[in-house]
Amino acid sequence: MGLRTRPFLRLGDRRTNSIGWTADVTHERDTRDQQPADTSVSVGAGLRAVRRIDQAVIAATPIDQRLVQRLIEAGSGTGSCTVSWIRTPAGGGSPEGLHTHPVDQIFYVLAGLMTIEIHGVREDVGAGSLVVFPAGVPHRNWNDGAEPTIHLAINAPAPPPDVPFIRRADATES
Image 1: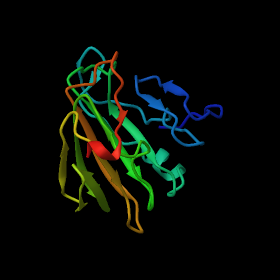
Image 2: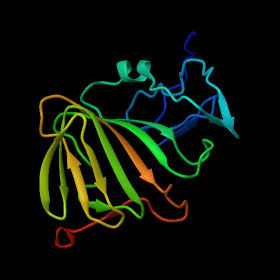
Image 3: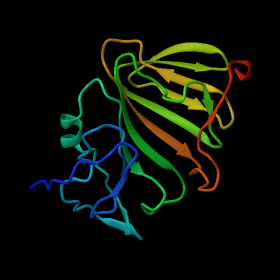
């Protein structure tokens, strides 16, 4: 399982690798298309039964940078939801600030302590917590701690491709 190298990618680039993983470049060194061979069972048109986090990318990305690995998204064989693995560094948070989505967004916190705000109410949530942001409800999240937070972000149903996924909200909406 050797890794292939790719030329330097710019922020905002979009890449698809040989097994159909698509990633947006959210940090300066992008190695997300260097996935190990995927030998999991195919369960339909391009959908693999097992999706793995790319540990090489995690190791190669500085701990002070936000990292997003998209596990399920449009074009990956399912249209019912999207799932991303997200690491937020200490002091980081929602790049959009207070915002809404046209679909429900669910976070499952895997590590660290995340602060969330929903309807103007703040709460600290740790590993093992499930957070639900209903569609259209202003919310945000950030990391006030000293260690990174890691969470899964699940959007259901899958966001419509013709509707902006994020809409900034002003403070009066919370």
